[in-house]
Image (cartoon, rainbow, N blue to C red; front, side, top):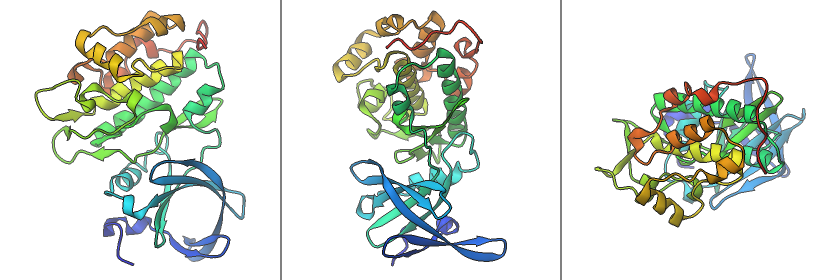
Length: 304
């Protein structure tokens, strides 16, 4: 079988035997090699080129395994992000290793039994205090990514894992569209991301002086995510509404106000979603914003 990845990733490869109803990994442990047996439990999610499975070992330990069709693999960027950011376990999903068969490649990762942020928000009320905690954790993760020249490019509730409910702890996941910036601070224009969370410069609606965009696309998406936490909607659910903002630069505050978002919260979202990328808050700047000051009492619930 020809190598699927560069040799630098061999250290993360899990030696695997595929058997009738399970598979085994040979894991080095205290100068010995032991076999770990894993079985699939159920499918956690499915996209156009990948599935994510819940798997369990003999001791009841769980993990999530992303199964990707080999013809769909365009580059190594997801594996690069998982390995390079792996030391920051407080911010990003933990990566256990990768393995392959003739048809698929598999990424073994941390499983969050509480699901993702979208699923949590679907259940109803969330305190504004928790919104601030979530925003601070995501900003800390984005700051690490951006300082290491990574751009996520698909920040949205579905890609945020809820590791703990009390206290609320989240982690950034799904680096399938992430990209490392090797030189400079910008990215060649490539329309990636999710429609309701994508920045206008990525769609081509906002014409900058060059054909590149920056880490500011993640800040825009975070603004959409915070708006969603308050209102159960994004500011620009359609291309037409986004285009109207580009033409008139009049940010729609109505839904935020209906959801009892305060002036600090509204101002924070607007600063994250300035039309010109260079005018948006960076992750470092955003962490200093007044809205993120957490008080013990007087916070509002999400208004839906």
